[in-house]
Length: 118
Image 1 (cartoon, rainbow, N blue to C red):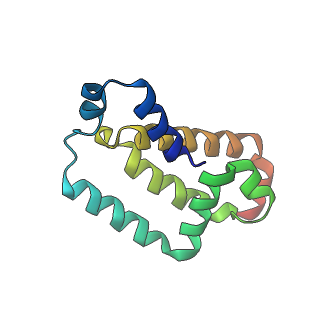
Image 2: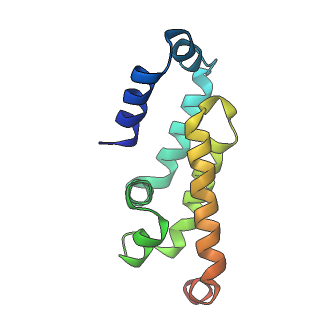
Image 3: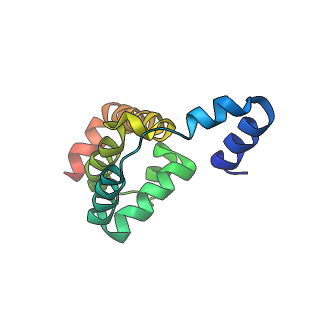
């Protein structure tokens, strides 16, 4: 089960209808979506797949397995910041913030290794 499916299941079973309606009536502007799409497109398909892998298995595991390259981390953080800076993205903004923090923690604990690659 994906995180999205779990969230929908949880909302359906435990949230009154008016709270669900409130969550999905966030005033998200089409410009915000277009900007995030542009940022995602700028990454290119190789870095896009690295972002997907980080979201699926986590930062450290993605790097240890060789799927995510150290040089891509700054681009990935930049993309996640574009999501994080918009509070109207709701849970996605919070998830992006969590992922940024995990990347930063990885970078701090592995400074020697990162400096060798840059």
